[in-house]
Length: 265
Image (tube, rainbow, N blue to C red):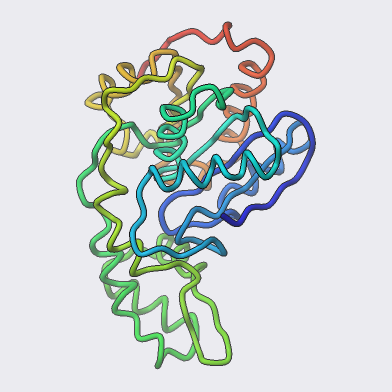
């Protein structure tokens, strides 16, 4: 996987969500890399990482363990948003001895219904061979029922070369892997290390119905809600989000046993 390293100290790995790239959590990286070694990752089928026809969380955890080997890491804090949060949780269950803490932003260890069919439809119907600029691409996505902020985010994946426009991400591979990425095949495993779940106050990705799933697999959990934010909480209120994450990592980095289970929504 493609990744960028900054700072020095205990390692913190940052994982973006579906349709994202390693720049999505860059403001958090800037907050952390004065005290930590921060590794921002392009997940498979995103950014500059390898493309694959089918992607599972087992594949992602395998690739993450490869980064540990390349950078000679023994343990790291892992922070992920949305799909990246599920990847962080899956890694903790598969490699608990390699995790100092886990932060999952607006996601739970649960199977989710399909939520992105209109996004895939808008992206896959975009006529890359005939569009002339990003403005026309934006109009197309919004006419497909995608709101302006989401469309602007998605178009960060659009690149222009000599042949015209193309996607940085492997759109077909993500579409074919979508069922794998919304499911959760790790129900009978548990990670007892410190975990933080941060949810957007206006988001429905983490609600009371997910409480049992969270505590059954991640019993040493804290939860925070950022009011006035949706699923993109890290972009909507970055200062608050970054402070919450840093304070949690600082505490669990110095004394993991001091993190108590005080889950609430």
